[in-house]
Length: 158
Image (tube, rainbow, N blue to C red; front, side, top):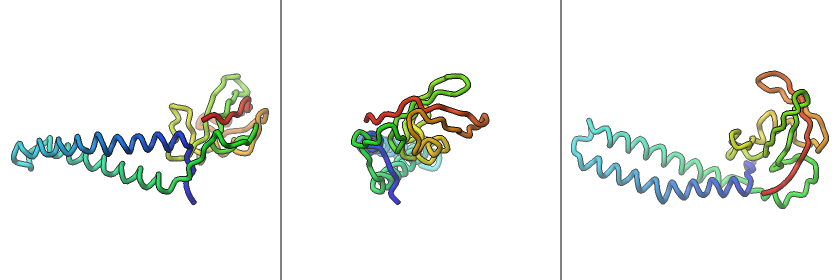
């Protein structure tokens, strides 16, 4: 099965991949050749640090290329699910006890970032929301206990 990813998320990952290939990879290659010029490689900390950095960069490049080649890119602006929560939806939730509002977008596992309000489709919160409609109440098992939220808004902006 191909992993879903939003169009915006795929663009972000492609930009990271491009920067790794065109900026960071050449910079680390320069750092390695400069460190090599200093002589004895066994006791050359700059050389070993640069080689380690090169390993991280090459690993991330391979990871991004593999993920992007196997991803199913979904343009959420083309979805017409109305008030129903599906992949890509931006969901406004209100805590039933505190009326505190939270906003999340349900995205692919590759692009999830809770600090930006992007939650993975495989997360417990997203699984509780999928298929529900605006106005529904959902019960979510959170680390702090069971919480109830009302879905106050569902949108599909890019």
